[in-house]
Image (cartoon, rainbow over all chains, first blue to last red; front, side, top):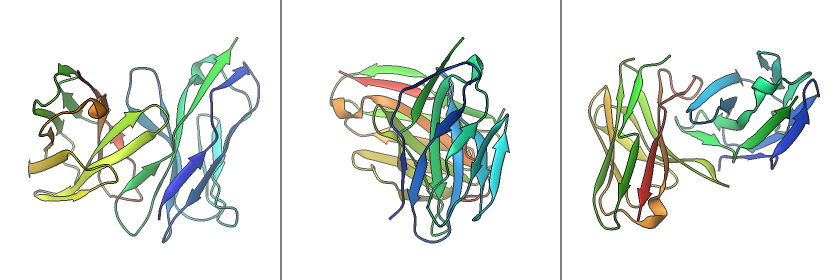
Amino acid sequence: GNSVTQMEGPVTLSEEAFLTINCTYTATGYPSLFWYVQYPGEGLQLLLKATKADDKGSNKGFEATYRKETTSFHLEKGSVQVSDSAVYFCALSANTGNQFYFGTGTSLTVIP
Amino acid sequence: DAGITQSPRHKVTETGTPVTLRCHQTENHRYMYWYRQDPGHGLRLIHYSYGVKDTDKGEVSDGYSVSRSKTEDFLLTLESATSSQTSVYFCAISEVGYTGELFFGEGSRLTVL
């Protein structure tokens, strides 16, 4: 089946620290991988995506590389800001259907 | 911003009553989804639609039904609400399906007493 496992939170970092949020997946077929971000009181919005192995998605200083050999899609940012405080969701969709599967979310708080 | 409107945004109801949540889109996207968000579970798919009158179940569909009679509207119905259905419900839309982006509504918070 299809599933996503991401690291438990919450994560608290100081401003300008390095961020890694781990995400691994199990999928049938050839999945596309996504990171979504949710700010308080809002719906999710796409942060970045990768649709095939070795692709790197990037946006707003965040990056993630689709690693088929380790079934991973870890989110990284070199220097976090207070405004990055949010909940981050790893997700996948498989070409065997049009369903999207989400991890449990990782809450990030960045302190000045 | 994608044109997605969920209604109502907040609702409190009693166990055993029927509830309908509405998702309305102005983007003419083919795919529409209903998710519920609960602490410790992330987002879980309830039902989705891949066209008018074409729907399918997700992983947590028990106790829920859906209908899509027009491209722009996707209704989620709880025939007889239970306390376990207290949650935040999100509608999402996608133009191209599995390789594309999901656009989310702002959510509907449902409390079943």
